[in-house]
Length: 345
Image (cartoon, helix red, strand yellow):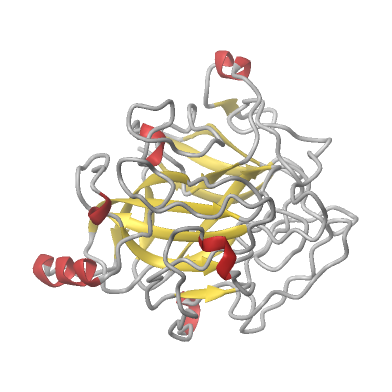
């Protein structure tokens, strides 16, 4: 670790502390600027879509018919909630703000990015590590999988095999369980490989995917989710064919949005399936994650754990020179173990 040079300048460390959650993998646009706050209406500080960030620090390569790892940073998952993951092929090298251009590839009802049994629905900040790109963003214990309770989960999100090849934007949206009516959204530049070369066929597949659900953004929708204290799990309407329900949704969470019928998802197929296909088993309230398994209900993806079975700390991006190439790596700070890497030049 001593030979690794930090990717960002020291000035980033002076940025203010923030709460809530952010997506750190795939690498988001403007990773030195992204915040854990919800998106606002256009003209606000962090406007829809994607908080307005567009700088490409690293474009993640994803393989159609396989999965991509989605990981988070933060200590305030607000009891969990429901997430969608989507794609936008318009407006390159960034994206468009037109809601119809954002198409759903996967939906998780409940348990995303965490399932919290403790109250008030947030997690104790990890006392050992607080940082994302050397910034003072609090983090919490990570599950190291998609089943742990009272810890931050990670997910292997299937990339449809019929997506067209080429550059695109990957999006994560989140409607949390315990808060006022908010929408969180961050986006990442990606390149799709192994998909459809026929542009017309690929475009047709994308157009047939449902539009990512949008609420709580004045100017784009009149729909707002519940403002109850514990609003329950929001059942995202029209979630698409691909997804998983981890926690039973609460119709009271819909607010004045449509009350959706129970979601019906296609069963997972092979390695491109979801990390979890049924409500997650519980773990002890001290944040310990269940032991990783290779059963059909497990993604088989796990991080190194500390002696008490939990993943302490978060991930950080650094650069290291290897020959003539510069590699952007994701490093688990607890052990210095590389868990993902991609060549940036």
